[in-house]
Length: 345
Image (cartoon, rainbow, N blue to C red; front, side):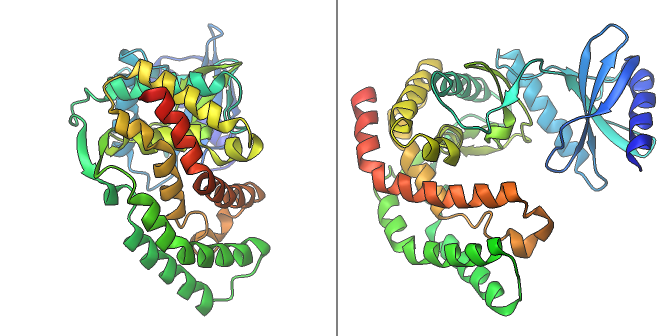
């Protein structure tokens, strides 16, 4: 479909399936894999319409939206989902599959990194989210071995395969050249990463989580969290990993070299107040898990080979920041953990 025909399709779907009479429909901010639209209805309410590409697992999207509804019922700031008149979360019509949620007014993503009171605000909301999702029907929190969170052996195999692919192919571009060098550095550093991970508890707590709690999926308004968006279908992941992923975003770490340890401490304190059930051992593990996970990851180093079209200037900048932030976290782990011990113990 063309852009204009997509807008017309959205305009026809809304009154038929959602009893929304659109006064205006315009293309909204692009998603990773979706096309998004902003709608103002005849009552001046605003809606966010997500259009899924062909081949999307729509049942998975329904489960993800239902998880957001579950979190919202528990008081977590998640945009309200508009169900169809038949009660469905996703509808397919006119060659288009869409979902509709309330538009979050006056908010922006946290992609600029955390600062000031935002660290504590994010920590509190993530703690609230994990407290609520611990009671999800998909199952309660459970202990899992550290290797399920950061698997050094598997990371070594993936990095070796990636370097072999780079050696076989002619993949040009400055990011591809840098990514190949960074992959070699990560492979060389894995023995040190393995030693770093031995200091973690034998097990960490795994539970139902957001699943994609990155800065584009946290909407902020001033110093507060306005909404968490784009949850994934219910699945168990390490709670400490998810908390560290957002509060130790590479851009926050690099942009505020003197402030981020204090920001981390304030986020962890706020998380603990909102979710006292998570073990102290897990909270103490947040920076070490974050460092180990990033050191074991091949993303986005593999993108020039796996999805060259995804290599944008933004991805280039993020990849380099992620690599640099991993080194910073590893260098300052002991100091940061001492701050957390003083806070939690």
